[in-house]
Image (cartoon, rainbow, N blue to C red; front, side, top):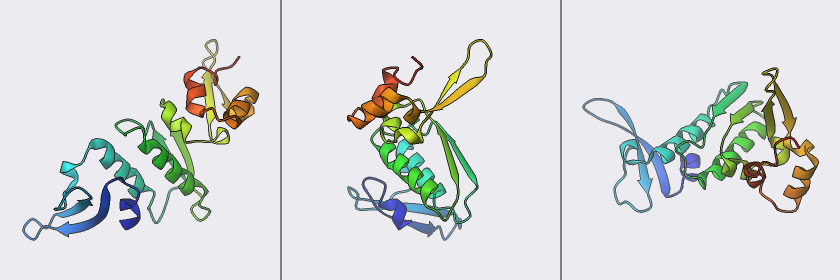
Length: 163
């Protein structure tokens, strides 16, 4: 829990608490701006969602494939870089062997990725089949990212579309 707490802004510590009457188990979050710990009821949806993703990445028996659709929903855009970094570490950590597949509609999420980590799917309107291309294989995209242009901005400006 401490590793997770360190990755969530304004959270210092996360601990478990069992209610003596109901015997329900709760998580108590200790925030930097609060004198008393609080439960998930007092957290924003985005912070709670980030916590859930980070908890998922701590699974001691990880699955061979982890698929996440649109993790940006409800998440503060600046936390997308944290999530992308954690997903990258999870996928490349060596001991897990988990392949991570994420779909997104958020340029900010792409800003935290490298062109070789992004695959562009384009649906052929005639056949209905999708063609897949790694962003790093699009010459002008790789060149512009090397020059400092964020990948999400290139996508937003239609540079990831076929020319």
